[in-house]
Image (tube, rainbow, N blue to C red):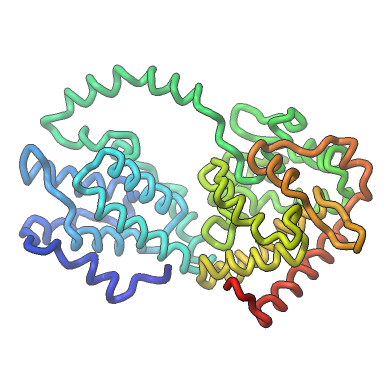
Length: 392
């Protein structure tokens, strides 16, 4: 998706066929503020609709949705604003709420604008988010009825009394998979310790990469050096003190979701269809080699598009896949690096590493080998783009 076009704006502005935008709807944009969170701006609209249209409440007009979009874009769209927009849309859809269609469309437009905005814009938006907190109840947690005065007492009785039940359900739910399958695997097997705040010790991580993964100290040091861009800016003091928060990987500079990523671990869940889509690039039906990854990356970049994808997303895709095939792959009889489907499934789906003895038995891969693989992958991507394929 690209930036919002004139056609997109028309789709948002024009009311459904046979309906008119009320005077109340025209005044609604005045309630919005670029300094408020996305959640609070939507809450203000919902509260006004419910209080001014009647017991059943009103629906958000396309014109109001456009105003919401424009105010969210002010200063850039932050990862949190995007996440809140998508969560709220999903929640309203699950409730079969009358506002679900327009909120879903709004979330899609926000996603498109976020994908196409530059890195510096995203960085500025993330910084501006640091001092903002929701003043209204979260619309992602079935709290929208609380904005309706006539329903406040009923909402409290229904939801507050069920808080313990909801909390217990969350505790028993399957743990989310980390967006980094290697970190997730090290933590699950107990090689890395995570404290109550979600932090790991970078010194321990450095040691584990050498002793458990079998990579050189130099390459481990390079990986540790990415700590400052592996978390949010607000986590910089903790990273400087030797900590990395594994719960704050999402939305960091290294996060390239929507910018050429595989999508296999999207939203902390394993997606079989995305895994099979990646494996489908295999030239031998058993493993992926450097050339196979090159084709997959080209298609992933083409799928998402945008300046950020072509620049930042490209380098991160190559870095990630080169690291995986170097650390967990093998060299075949022709001297080509490959990684088997079984190994990849263990990493992605079960977040489980190969046995330590297997990894230590291989020649340690260092910085030079890693960048050599990245270089080969880049060359193969260029060849694939020039030559083309029948399946494109």
